[in-house]
Length: 143
Image (cartoon, rainbow, N blue to C red; front, top):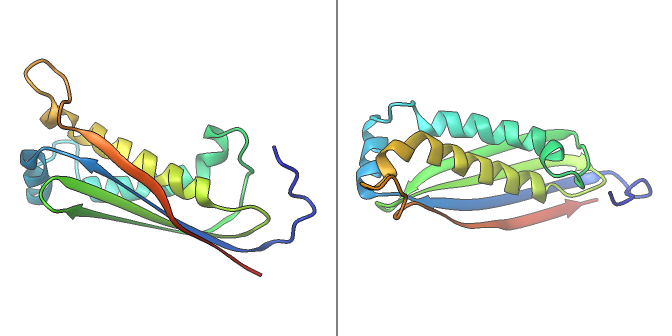
């Protein structure tokens, strides 16, 4: 791990975003509440929050941080994507972008898991499904 002991604790924020491409039929199931495993929006928002808190366990070079705020936002974009954006805030010595990226990644994986039965083709493969463009939208440090 990097030594951050000499750094001051300051306000830090990061926003990350990513999307999952799904079949149009799956998007229609989501819209109509016909996903057998439940509401992807509620489940994925909770999972994103939990992922932020567990980032240091998944990525061994990340510091354990005290998270002050997490705000997941999940929406349907067009007729073939579900997107996830997560804002993370903390007053810490190190940034929170890895926590935001982890939250987005795990939330998107959860969506895939919840809809995989509808995404498989006749061979049991996923030719239409893809997690796309996970990235940091912004990061902020305020002394």
